[in-house]
Each structure stands twice: as C-alpha cells, then as structure tokens.
Length: 139
Image (tube, rainbow, N blue to C red; front, side):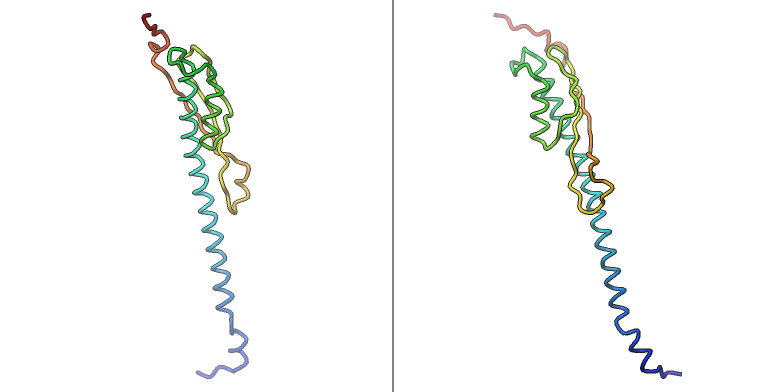
C-alpha cells in the first residue's frame, strides 16, 4: 500500500516548480495592475492640484489692480505646464472676478493597456472678492 511504483513518482517530479512559477507570474502581474491603479490615483491628484494652481494664476491676472499682467489664459497655461498638466479649457477674461479651468494629466502606466490614452482630468474655479476689482488707489 505504501509502495508507489518508481515510474509514476518521476513523472510528477518538478510539477510543484511549474505551479510555483505560474503563481509567481500571476502575483507579479497583479502587483503591476495595482501599481497602475495607484498611478491613476496619483495622476488624478496631480491634475486637481494643477487645476487649482492654474485657476488661481488666471484669476490673479484678471485683476488689473494687482498689477500681475493681463493674460489670464497664458498664466493658467504656464502654471498648468509647471505642474505637469495640459490646459484644456480656461473661462477667464480680464475684469471678471472668477476663472474656471480644466486640465489633464497623462498617468504613467506599466501594464494595463486599457487605461492607456485615458488622461486624468480635473477642473477648478477660483474667485476674487469683487471689491478687489473695484479698488482704486488714491493718488
């Protein structure tokens, strides 16, 4: 009963190694997929930070009294690019008290091909106190 024919024992030799290799490969691929998911979350956070910075830069340019310039869209674009994002939309004009921007950031992906070409997008709005626009310095 305890005797196993010698030929059948040799036939299964190494099967644990194959199973271990397949399991290791599956775990590595799973870890890379989780890393890609994390990369998407990081890209989303970077996009939101870039959108907020771009909106603030645009709204500061919209108030001539602050003396920062008069190109709010250019300022928003430059700030978005400094933060690794691309400006998609800027609703901003000199004299208005608010600015709305939308940006996108491309995530750095390793394995999940279905997510490639899908940028993380974010929008932000910044508003100045309307009194800032009507402020007149006594001369």
